[in-house]
Picture 1: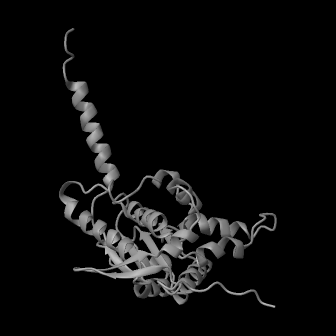
Picture 2 (picture 1 turned 120 degrees about the vertical axis):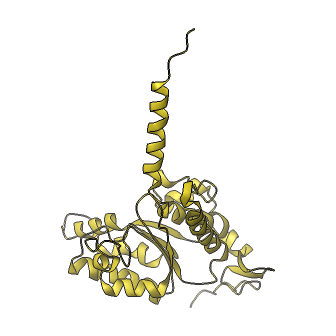
Picture 3 (picture 1 turned 60 degrees about the vertical axis):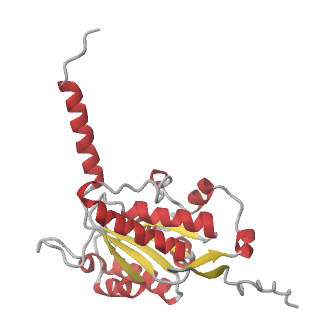
Length: 260
């Protein structure tokens, strides 16, 4: 005899969200039934469970730097990410953050996860693509103790997944097949995917590889369907900060010491 299934929430119909019509936009607000079902834990525990690296644990929209002459570009990317978190799950399409290293792509992706985890009780997972592929290759060794299915299951099944640094790996038939399986499965199951990549669709230099060169044409085509593009053509923030610190230290060293 099958146990009785719990009745769906009368307010949201069991989807876990309430659609709220505002004056300027439509928003999705988490329903009380989902809040009650969510695991009681602080944001630090939620981020750890979502495998967010410690380096990015403090990333939020409030501490995302919009700096220098690139402030407008960065502010636009931040607004798109913030609106995505606010409106989720109105669309099952994700976001593809595309731009050079150090512009805040991973920061914005984690900021979205933080909001979805803490405010909407959404299951999230952070996945470094290179690390995942290395772990999958290790399963070829029978002594590894893990199967490919065990490693892939969370990436395939979690409601919202970040695929970080897509394209950093050398493209081989196995890599392309694996990426195709991940992306296509999430697309078919209508699960939202957030992607970050340093590679562009049309590099300014002919010697540079495009994103399609790095992940395959099939995977890039699928990402067109399942993600909104968020280009961030800004400068490397980490380099700018290092230069600023260097100039600051140099200025201090060049100043004559005050007599006491």
